Length: 511
Image (cartoon, rainbow, N blue to C red; front, top):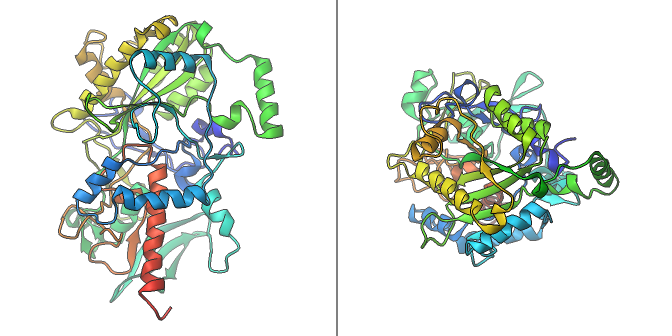
């Protein structure tokens, strides 16, 4: 039920609809979180992670696709992919434009205007904006709702729930099916033409490697017989995110009364309207570039309000990011005295690369996730986040924001107490300890020409050197897009569907 209600999306992490993945321990990130790891929620439900996400819808940018084309991906330029966005935006996917008329939002807008920023538009990519949501008539619209429920009566469509793919199967020509676990039985399903692998940037590489398609040295170490030596699982990218906690006067961010909450529930149950239908403030974003001459964003700012005495909501939020109990306690103590605004800084063009590997030769064992956030040699990722912290401090000094008496909450964070609060060294320490992510994995089956040894699939999304299988999901991104990746993933799927139709309906005239 909670997957349906927009405002309850944070409660879905660690639920039965979540695979409950965790990253592996690392020297450079997630150090201060519980057990020294980041949580990595993934949708264990029809519709995948689109049934768990924050429902934000933002297209990729022109410069994202310029990079893709420079790496040899013909047909993936922005002008070429635009028609795929327009196709499903006009068709199955309903997108809602929702604005929360809150006092704190108006105050922040006036502050941005004082700093010289304008509202973002289709031609002006920097600035503040209320982004669209994948919400339809007050309920979440996952990919399953948008694209599967409308065709569920087709005689050539079979949907199997509670099933997990173990590996691909092969014959002399290449891939000829999949081995899948259904009702505790391994069943082989044969493909007459080809297999489409759309398991996401964590599980598509897992299935390929379990099938013997992956880095030779890694697979041999697990005793998996090699079908094709490819750099599967490498080039992992995400959007690192850091939370800055501000104290603000309650006058600007008042708690909702019990009567308001009861009315909110009534409005939602009866009419699918109101607070629970619109995910308030989550879609109000600021898009920045750390270079004053930059045209496209490399830093996104989210504004998450928590009125005073929002302990239960804050607990869900911070538990979802795996903050340890002692840090949560300091945050709750701050919220007992003040209303809070969490400013989330998201690095949109992370240079750091991680990796997905197999834990064992058991295809149902959880994969290993090594995100390697903030590991780039030039520390560009760290410096982007540091720019974000200093930007917030400039925002706090504007006249409209200053009226709310904002203060940076000093939580005396463990592991960083040796540094003076608010120095560059202090912030760099907190990044390495408390940077997490916004669940946007990509790049682990990188797209590019076969001549590039780092790539896994070609621009036609076929796996290099292996007949009968394509990968169509966010794992094929040559570089992560500078936006929340749900929209771009739909675009990849739409283009992938057209590639399949071209292959089997046009060129194969016997069909």
